[in-house]
Length: 181
Picture 1: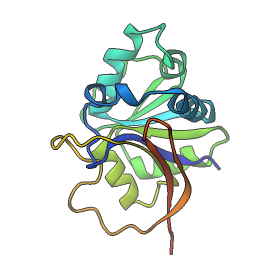
Picture 2 (picture 1 turned 135 degrees about the vertical axis):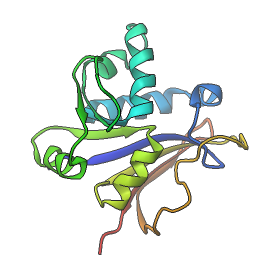
Picture 3 (picture 1 turned 60 degrees about the horizontal axis):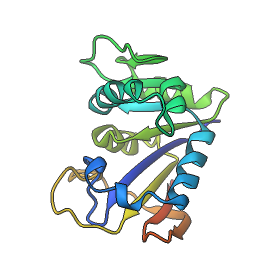
């Protein structure tokens, strides 16, 4: 069974929006190793519409960027009832019965399914009990504004720490697993 892993860059105050504005100074060798490991273990992305559209506009235009081969080549599933076409390489729209479709994807053979960005989708996935791990890279910066990963209205979700490490840059890399039952 494949794991569904939420993987996010966050600020110390929980902001996940626009990491290009605050994350750069913290991308060091530890971060490179960690992100490369995430990509190596994943053979599919699950994204919300807005994140998908942003990624689809950016990644194909950066073929030489680190991680571009993975991002452009991996299977991509976008959960949306409003997206009419998904033209980025290897993309599939999930518009009907997303919970059942995602459960079926998790049952298939293969690597991890990674969710990036997609705050609304992440909340929905947690509410559906579909998330196996939440992998956070928390940068030691407070931005004071922007979309937070965990919005009001999310039910209380107890977590267990699977892994925790501190990078030389001050980034806290922590992996949680939702506790079930």
